[in-house]
Length: 108
Image (cartoon, rainbow, N blue to C red):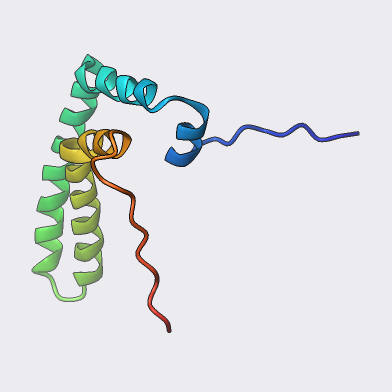
């Protein structure tokens, strides 16, 4: 019995570009950016960001909690970046304003 190929749960941007026109993907991002659901999600991200920053600052002041503080700071920064610049970043990629650059990993 032959196995059917499953579609991936999450497609990479490159896979989406190979399946759709860039203009279609750009239109989809523009629709998302102007949709109420994105505005609600963005507000939730910013609320979580502010809460997480407070926890990070609290943990940073406690001896033995610096690792937790660093994790929370990273999580908070990710939430902030997602809410404020993610859509714009990928719109620029789709419009060929910014090329995707791969930074090679340093030799160990």
